[in-house]
Length: 574
Image 1 (cartoon, one colour):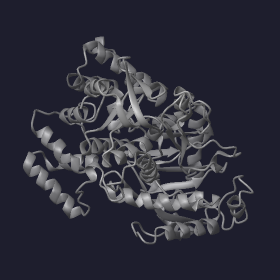
Image 2 (image 1 turned 60 degrees about the vertical axis):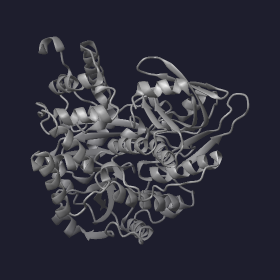
Image 3 (image 1 turned 30 degrees about the horizontal axis):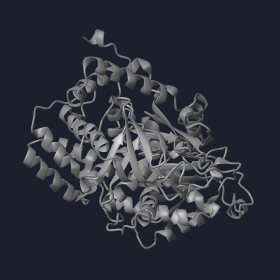
Image 4 (image 1 turned 90 degrees about the vertical axis):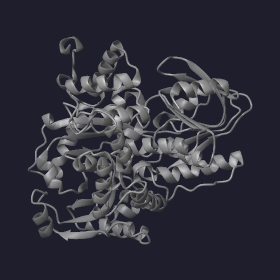
């Protein structure tokens, strides 16, 4: 159903059981769960799906080993369980990741850890081998029944240096354990939406639609593309606006202080030496100031992060020069001989963690656990309850969505009829796990479509088993690779544009693919991509120019992409 058709139906029948405001991963997870229960649910976001805080993750799926010293055992246990479920349900987009901790002391932090646990101290103190060993033993204990990933191991200084010669020689040992990572987090979110709408025709998701106001039993929505408004009458509103939760509540006439967000920034670098030094592992460590940092290979690049800075206004969050320098400098703590130059940065991104409002003196001490804050109807300002989804993270989105859905079902007096614990996501459905089975699958699609096997393998890596549909679409017409990004083809992008709710040029560059994040965006690529999208999305020549200029502005100001790489003059190209 197109967005025009959805708006037309809303005007005919404005009533819906649930309105979700905000299409980050928590809102999307809840949308999918409610759709599976047969609930008529409408989800809107003033930007693109997964375009806010959820687009600024470290790409990691982890239990949060550092949460243990704050006594958040329930959160760690839940996160590890959910991590393993994502590995099972989305094997195309959730991958095991060995994680190595460089350790510089044996017993540092032995006294500090119990004081943190008792909430008697929140100052940083470097964790030594003993404390890390205890934490990793608990980590393994929490997943003892699942046995999805190998147990942790400690490696001597000599063995660590043999395996990774460029690591800081001041280490006393290293520890290696397993977590997981997501090469395409935004695609997980998108496939959850597509699955939900395929399962339930009464589940509708709209990007670029904002919450304008609310009063009594009605909520007014605004189409950010046309400026037109539509009124809906929900029985329940779920506020999943992340860092903007308090602002969304204010738009509905309710003043709240649920969120106390912190800003996190990352950089992506093109640095083969650093990538090689990581040896395919995430390097997870404390920087000199006590901040937990990480770096790991992101396909052929390296992701480095992250900062943790309080912000009052999520609209003003951006990756600053100081943060860039901080992330460049932190590499030397682990690899003293490897230098990162500013010219090697191909992309950066920044987002605000929607953490609960807290008086903690250190941002690292603020709980990452999630909660649901309820504003009950008052009979005057609002006649429906508002459930605000506070905090949460990628790893635990399914469990948080399940909790929110159960509350909604109770209020609607509906039974739960479907469970998401073992439900495959998108291209993870019927996914062949063994290498031999994958080759058989690829050979089967190749024989049906006639597309070369190496191209099928490329699509399989990018989309999982959805690659079969994409390959069939490609084979049904004349196709050609992009000049500026030959690993993508025109009909592949047309398929995504037709089926994945692409509205703007940057939707494809930033969230339907990793093109921008991997530093592949050039002026030629912008021009060629816009030309491919234009017939599908009905863009005029003027609209093409607007879309290119919009993408250039976002990529240069928000993502650190140099203007000389993306600036384009359509008159010159013509």
